[in-house]
Length: 477
Image (cartoon, rainbow, N blue to C red; front, top):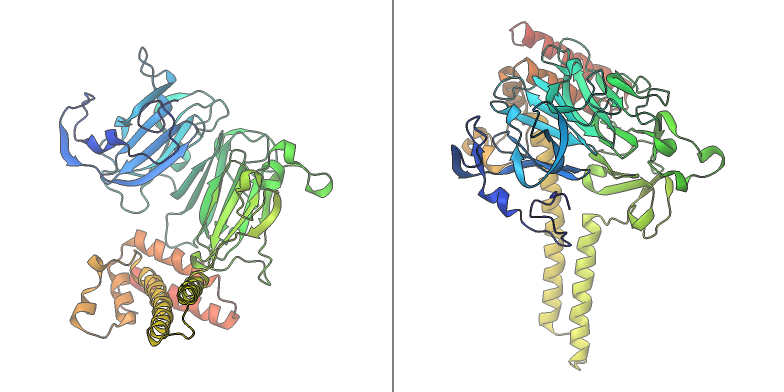
């Protein structure tokens, strides 16, 4: 209705290509004429976001596009905030000459993490916000709406905090940061601001705030890797597999009509930790990401093999085969890859035998047996290949800090059949700048949190700290 689908004002029950976006070129000047000085090379989309009645996309050049019922300058007064409907993607001109790295949106507000310079160099992101600000969700210290993006001073260019994740609820905003300085202990911090009447800010009260404030009840030594907001709740995930939520109905995002009596009633003003019932310490194994719907949360862990969900179960959104609500994380009916392959082999064997019996034969032919054996062998090979791909990807990310891609394989793999992991890791650390070293340290601190043996953990800490200290002094350890 508001053009948020990008192809007119008609609803669509099936995915439909946004034709207008395919025809757009990257704006290479500050001209706002629709076809002025545009590059003819088609754009590629690198990131997307949707919320409220608007949609957003970041292209491969770092430009931000927005369509639907979104905040735009008034046609009469440039600085007066108004919501304007558009079924065609519009560029956010204020970020011309900069790179938009992340974006999030609530019902009527937008928050973006944008490079201070033309290119993103690691920790130089500046946080901007604009749109409706009736609850202080822009983090600018007041409740006046903004027609154009305005920098949040807490996360400005001179801030000691580096942004790495942002999310918006209906009327609140949450941001994950870490210290920019690599010579200090890596410290993840979650900040929230905006509407707080259901405890979605996690500050211990139901008060709203128009300035970013840290969620103090989260452990300081924990490295947070994922963040998302529902309409009125917030959830975070740590590298070691800890999950916290806060807000409406004990942080589960349940609507008021789903409240239970007794201990399960009431909103969570502080973070509440959710525990995995399948592990002794309650940690979710090999955590990947969490995401929030309007009133439920979904967690991916087990290196992508397992899913958990909790919150309001209406319409079957928890994936349990029922519509009941859940106050604790419950596994989804999500088959593992191995189970899926075994099921495929069993199904093919069954079909082969069924076909055989329908033909009226009294015994299985040699060809049928060979086909069955070949299918089983193929299934086993697929399982082994998948396991090898997962291991190689994890190893590659651990060393080079980017996904495994044939186009960016190290030269040593082409020149020799032997891959010296230690030497490659040393080369990466020697070539890294201070920002990259900080990210490397953060990554290994996350890995360290999963080590249970105290002596091994202490030894790893000593090795990592000595290596980083030696590199900062410009000498080989």
